[in-house]
Amino acid sequence: MMEIELNGAAHQVDANLNVEGLIATLSLTGKAVAVAINREIVPRTQWQQRQLQPADRVDVVRAIGGG
Image (cartoon, rainbow, N blue to C red):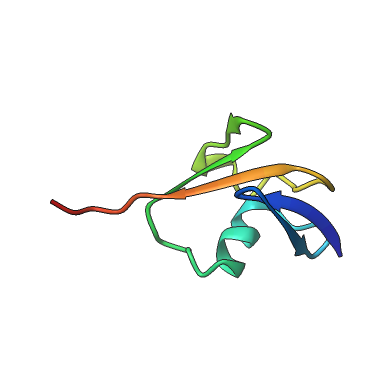
């Protein structure tokens, strides 16, 4: 296990977890979300390759429609 900062709060995740896996653990697979790690946007095409590192600052933003 390792600790990252997820949306401003400490969050424990499995070591060797990638962004795609994080999104799955958050039950957001297939949802309209954007991910930034250490204030850098990670394109969806790179989620599978981008491994999380201890102390990464991860922001996950979900698009919500409305009117």
